[in-house]
Image (cartoon, rainbow over all chains, first blue to last red; front, side):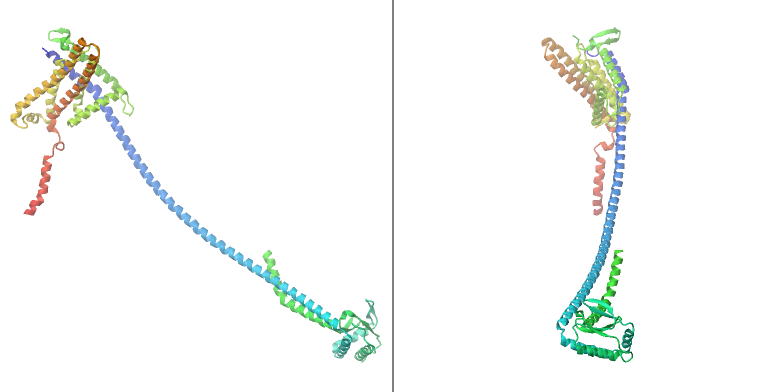
Length: 286
Length: 249
């Protein structure tokens, strides 16, 4: 018979023992290991998820901070741009003010230079005018003119004021010394010296001498010798010199007095402005 | 030549005897138990693990999945029984490559013992899952007249289990022996390889059939959600019809 019942029972028992053995030695440990691994993987996944969440949160925070930083940077940039614009405006205003001051200074300097130049031109013009006038008068000087001049001189003598007469008289009473012009040398010699461009004629000399005596002789005895001399520098005119006192009439004197008046006019016209200009320039340099 | 390893008796004392079937079975038990002990001595729960652990994990997980796929709700409860059936038959077949070895599954006594184990395990699991009354009632389904056929079915399928495994294993061994006598060189090797494949297939068939039988016995214990949801369908139809009925009123 193919079936041995003892073997059947023995094999059934063997199989049940094997089931128990494998359950104890194989299935339980392996299943426990699988469970442990699953738990571990689940824990790791949970941990990874937690870390991912945390990383996401941190990323969010970082993103937020980054956005805030961008905003702050934009704000700072805007402020810097505003400040730069304000500074630029301030610098431009300062540069404009400096430029205006420089321009004003330059204009003042130019004005001053213009005034100086005008003054110099005026002086030069005056000098030229006077030189031309002197030359013209010198060219025109002749005996006829000399006669007219003698007449004018005599008129002048006659029209002397009281103070002038007193001064003339006191000069005559002093030790008689007159300036003598001989061969270009001037030296003090006694007497009254009458000087003219040309040699006066005898009639003219006696006319002048008589007029002098007439003016001075009324109060004092006229014993002072009267000398006549020619002086081409006078251009045209006559002068009386005694003891340092000089009484003259000639064109050169007119010209000199005119020149002196023009000088005064120029001084009064230019002096205050030029002085203030010089003062302001000195302050600028300081 | 012995038709069955039962015939090779090493020791006998009356009814008691020690034949090749029992001896080889002990050998297989020893190898399986010792191998399991060696492998599970240092189990790793990390991703790095030994080859033996890996192999056993693959086998156990595959068995687990099969049990689950058949429809058993708690595969762990049946894993020891079904897994041991598979491993025992598979290892018994695998060792046929060792000369002089006769697989215990080539004995009708062994296959009958295994089939008897299944025969008793099925009602035990069924009663444990759904209670004695519900289990016994299952023999009256779909109608009471089916009771004798169901009982016959229980016995016939147990017989079929035993004979199928025995026939396959015994035939493989017999054919190999016959071919060794006729063409001793190439064909025995090819048929030995074929026998290995047959053994593995039979191990799979035996264990999966045992699982199916257990699943059939415990089927009524499955939750409603796992069945075709006839009642919920009826409820939905009722809900859909209700407004229409109200409109008619």
